[in-house]
Image 1 (cartoon, helix red, strand yellow):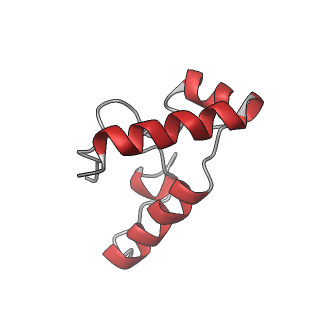
Image 2 (image 1 turned 45 degrees about the vertical axis):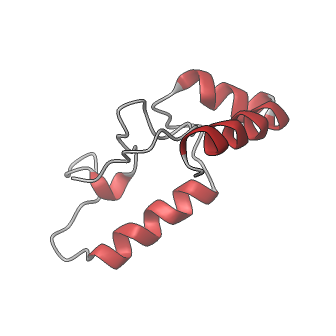
Image 3 (image 1 turned 60 degrees about the vertical axis):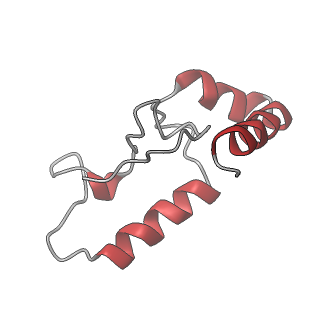
Length: 87
């Protein structure tokens, strides 16, 4: 199980820090395999952070903002980063 402790403004991560990513789900819906290693999982999460999947969101409102008002999404993501992830 993997989740974020720091709040993140992202369409595929909910307020509890859960991540919507196929390699974190068990088959038949997911792509989890015992052969996956931590490096592969972290790379998949890193890619999701850089390129959200708005068509499979956990946060529908953030997904809509990402799709239809990317400038506002980026502003909100920056504010959350400053608020929750900066010292």
